[in-house]
Image (tube, rainbow, N blue to C red):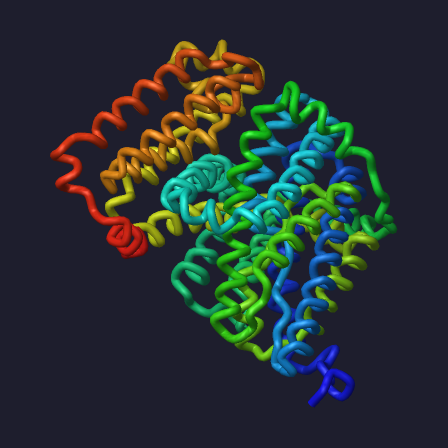
Length: 508
């Protein structure tokens, strides 16, 4: 069979189930984005006129590109059973950008337009980093302890996702508690819902019905929601350029969130592509990571503010026997859904209390994942990596008055919360290395903390020369201490070989 006679179908019946599975995942993300942003105080014209269309353009690009990659692989290997990679907005990165970028940006500026521009710039930078990770991703994967990375994300999940959304859940207990119970039963308890409806969808339906039944939402809201049907064109914007100056100026502490979550997002793409490769479809990992980065950069050009990624659901699509048609259809459907206001309609009808419990579950899942995928001996590293985001939550929620309000509790709250995601990884990585008796590497992470503090990336309100002198000195001192420990005979006698460390870190 040669390339001239080989036919890789554009669409087949197996693509139908795969499409609905991917469609539901992306729809949930789009609705969560809309409801969360509206709840924060972003106006509908920014949410539905800019952010959602921009995200849809990114999703369209990625789905079409991965369908193209599937065809290339199919032709190269002369196989008709090649499955396109599933693609969309990265769920962990979405929550980090919502509550680690967009919420703080709005708190700092008190202006939704300016905050949106900062967020768009942050997303564009994330795309550049993600594309670059195609060249250095494997090195970072090997050298940044997973427990430290996941611990940092768990801290954000506990405060801004699970904690914040639990507050929103209980604003209307009659709705929120019922929805939360359905989520616990259906997703955690793994009990099927009536008519085999997905638990998250069933929970939202019941929660929405209760909200209207008990009068928390008015029936007029439905007609108002239906009025959201309209035309939201995909228009390019210069918001990225305008937001860059702010991102590297007064809002530089927000930039500290972008690097770690982007590294995490890129590594997840790498892992998910590898997982599909184990099932027979061996895609070029570098090309996939670059494609993710380009998709993430295209979104901000049209107003989007959320990174994209290859989904773990790619393996599920492979098991379903899907080809490339489901990917193409997903991109096209979301383009029309965003353009004609379908996302706006759904988001206007569903109350926040009906969807917040799902976010609580997502936050709890991120915390659980940090522990479930790490050896029990690394639990202290995960725990200590969670603490900086507790400080970040306090300082963010008190807005610009944080220093004055929380100083009576502790003057360390604000600096610990500045650049929380990076400082969390530094602290968590140090603990991991100490647990492994790898004191030389612990000293390297300590000196990295000193450099980052000195230039104000962490523990400072802005990037500057000698921005946080005391923290820099502190990190240098513990770095020297760890170097001394690395020469200790007692430590050397207890050290494992490099191969033993690798095996031990992967153990459960």
